[in-house]
Image (cartoon, rainbow, N blue to C red; front, side):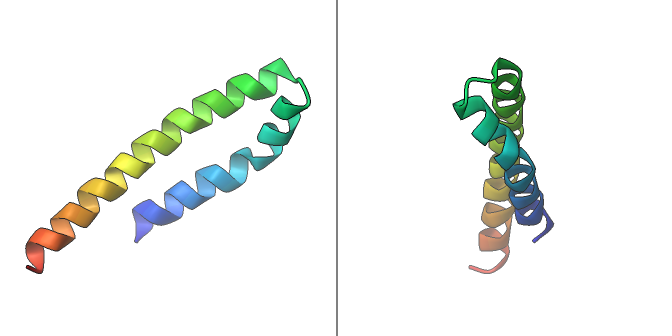
Length: 58
């Protein structure tokens, strides 16, 4: 599922910034917060896709 792969890619890309943000880097924290918004959108897209699949295969 392409939507799931996008979600994993976002999380993988932000991993380094999470570590930097935990170390006190404020700019990295901003990047993490922005990425978390993208994660939220990607997760919502997955939920929609799963519901569509469920409706197609009752």
